[in-house]
Amino acid sequence: MGVCDAIRQNAPVGKPNAMSAPHLPKVAGIDPLIPVSTQTAAPPPDVSAVPGAFLQDRLAGWVSDLTTLHELTESLAGTCALDGALHELLSAGAALVGARRGLLVLEPGDGGGPSRTVGLGLTHAELGHIETVPRGATAYGRFLDGLPDTGGPQASPDILGDPSLDTHSREVALRIGYAASYAQPLTTPAGRLGVAVWLYDEPAEPLERQRHLVGLYGRYAAQHLARLLELERARADTAVIREELLPSRLPHTPGVRLAARHRSAPGGGGDWYDALPLPDDALGLAVGSVHGSGPSALAAMGRLRAGLRAYAVLEGEDPVAVLSDLELLVRLTEPAGSATALYAYCEPGHRTVVLAGAGHAPPLVTGDLRTEFVETSLSAPLGMLSCWEAPSAEFSPLPGETVLLYTDGLLRRTGGTTDRAFARLHAAAAGVPKALRLDPGAVADHVLRTVLPEGRGRDADAEDVAVLAVRFD
Image 1 (cartoon, helix red, strand yellow):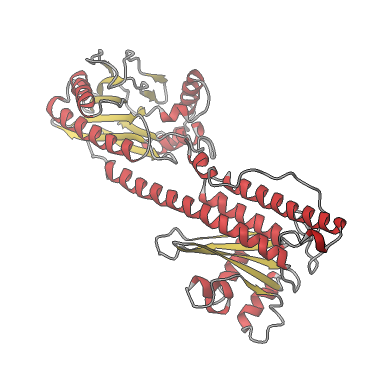
Image 2: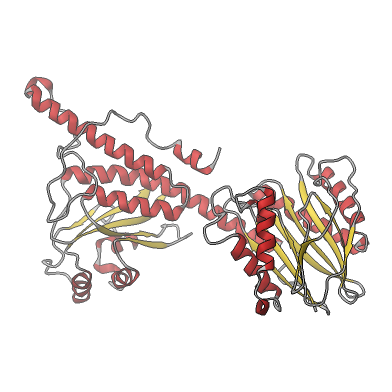
């Protein structure tokens, strides 16, 4: 079950039959963005006390309110990222209270973060102006500061007509052009999360029915935000652990320059890279990927990388022996898991590279004269066979060429077939401008930007990507 599916289990179910309802009249010059009933959200009156037509109108309004609330909460439940949920909440709340602009301040009361401010219909400059208003001068600021008697919704129907308004607050309201506000705190039984504030262009305040609906919506939204906040914190913790498991710096070895890039998956994956100095100015280079995601994949990644480093120190000149030992380690310590790995023994002084791969994509050599994949033998991933062994391959990079070692996530994030992914990677490496080829980091950055342009491979199912670039002088 994915994150979205788990969250949607808490969404309202059993959508009532939709019934048409008239648009709200203007509220101080503001038209509502979503038509909702002009009736109250209270239960229908006693049948014996009112005429049948009036009762039918009340029932229609009640069902219309429930339908609107269901649609908005269902849309919110479809958001699986914290930022998306914040924007959805702010927009839906504006429709419920009949406003066009607003801001939402996420500031968990436990101090664990993250803290964010998002706006609706406000530029970054306007948000900045609002944030210059002292917190004690606003109802929502006092709520965020945890002051007593500020836990409920706060309406400011005529900000400019308030004689107690300080000069700076008045200047900001006039500059941005709002005359009234309505603040809805976002809380759960565990504590405060933040507050949503909607702004009116003219003196106004929500109807009682609107307050009731936005209050119901806000309670559900706060629970949804709390779940997403917990996931966000877990991902942040996972990212910290992942960075600690990867090399803090790459070795300096005469004859080569190294650069590494790592893009984390939203769910946390197990892709890694490594480079360690060996005797006689040799280098051991490795990339690998552990199947799965989350903390278990990170733990397996750490064990696999540590094991490979040990085997590389003991018998690094023989990549086949290193991966054979690693295969045994995987079968003994990760009996239900599998992983891919590529290990290369590099002698920069002789410009020779001997490598072996276990179910891993071949390296790519790129330079002024050629861009081609290194020919390696096909082999199974680690943990798939009772005894792993495959022949090694040897090649000699030319001066000025860069060898790219990468994980399979780079190919799979393209969203195309394997052949197209390899073709895209080859074209990206071949198209590196000559001025960038002097720097292995610039080469890696260009390849990543080309293969994975902004927005590509950022969905919830995207995988880790690790790239190790080695330029030979």
